[in-house]
Amino acid sequence: MFESVRLIQEKYPFIPQFARFFLVGILNTAIDFGVLNLLMYISEKSSGFYYPLFKSISFLFAVTNSYFFNKHWTFKATEKDNAGEFFKFTIINLIGWGLNVGTASYIVNIIGAPEGLSPILWGNFAAISATVVTLFWNFIGMKFLVFKK
Image (cartoon, rainbow, N blue to C red; front, side, top):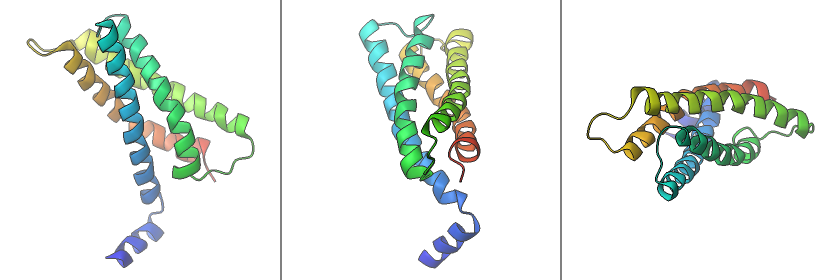
């Protein structure tokens, strides 16, 4: 079995990297959802102007965590030009932020929660949907533009 895993890693070296990226993403998602739900709970607001604001704040916390874990663990980057690398990381994540917050806000504020469904539960569904949309954009951007070797 271990021989099969080793052969797959040799033939497709991006698979273990994507697995690490996915695990970091799970942690980032937990941070994102934790901050988002805390803000919705404290403010008792879960739609309108407040939702994109709260989603932006929670996304920022998750992205900060993402930079350090993806740089040092996922992609094992050794870039000496940290300012240039961080600039590229910021650009990729600004686009990711647009995809993430835009998708989630569209679901919450345009589609709206189905009748009888909690607005907070709908806000979390929107956040999950946005995370899926953003996952692939972020991996490709990080691998080929930010932390490339």
